[in-house]
Length: 76
Image (cartoon, rainbow, N blue to C red):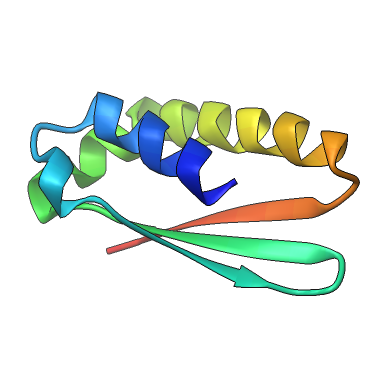
């Protein structure tokens, strides 16, 4: 899941080297923390949060295949 989020974020931003992605794994839920450069934060979130919502939808669909729940947190 972490690699999927990292791949999507790197495709969106101007500074792909600054993309950091960590995963905190629990029994049923994984929390994926995404950090990007300050200038790229708006690109990852999108207008009215549409890009972030789309990323969360893709992550949710992918995590349902492995019968886990994944949560995406975008950290400033």
